[in-house]
Amino acid sequence: MTKIINIDIGYVSIFDNYIIMEIDQGVIVTKEHNQLLVDIVDKFYKDKGVVYISNRKNSYSVNPSVYYETNKIKNIIGLAVVSENGMAVSNAEIEKLFFNKPFEIFSNLEDAKKWANKLYKKMKKN
Image (cartoon, rainbow, N blue to C red; front, top):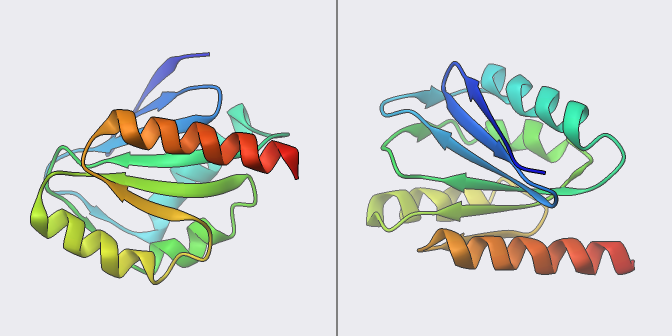
């Protein structure tokens, strides 16, 4: 399954085992925006786990309190941040402290996809 959904802060690509979200330049992601993710997970992954991949091509901010809400989405089994930008990677290291599920940072999207698929397979075995 591959589907692209435009949302008011960017777009989301839907795959079998993971979601890739790209946020628009300059957005400040708040807890209210987290409802978009909840709605997508509920619609496409109601009865299965999924890995959330944040592909940070653009510069934007995430309020770390968002991760408290993301933790509550039971079907999200892990989170990956993809960026080559040093500041975005540093921010992701801080954000990682607020998320209590597997969370990895990658410099390229392909590595994040591989990790997501491994994590999904591991989750399926348990």
